Length: 187
Image 1 (spheres, rainbow, N blue to C red):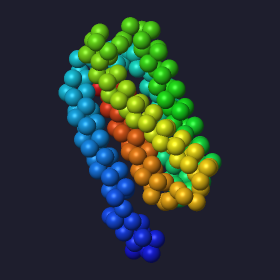
Image 2: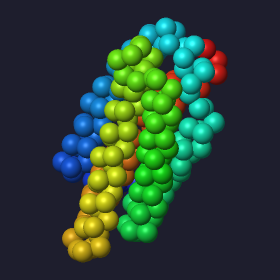
Image 3: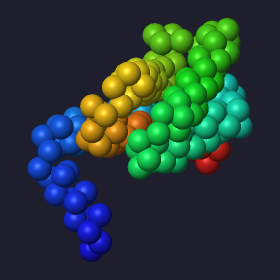
Image 4: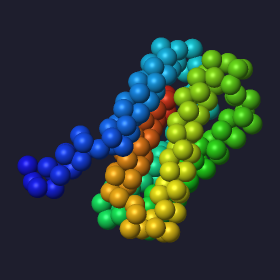
């Protein structure tokens, strides 16, 4: 184990902020797991709608932007660099814009929560994820502002905690994209 890995391990296990973020992520992971399982159990009833209405290709492009933001966040956190943090936020905002465009297209097609099982399940699962992305963008913005106004007062724990949350959001989307969008290609 390198000296840096030992420091990172000690800080994670001894810092209440990192432990708190890890516990929060664990609880949110359980929450998302329940919703994903419910979607999988119920998806056959809406598969025909999903196959004809979801734009897998366009969503894949916006997904790549979100997945790329994990890399920019890792660099931002390692270097404590505001420019990389801003790049992360821009990629996350581009993803959220793409999700909004997908919602608008589906709503125009008459698919919405409450009209059929697919619409309800789709908007619940992706909407909750979108809400988590929005929270992540707020956290990124707060960290950017704090790092701009008082850079010496922002410790590595702030960067690590927000980085953990952002990687969690990306990981959840990997599961959601696979189950909801790629699942239509094989289902």
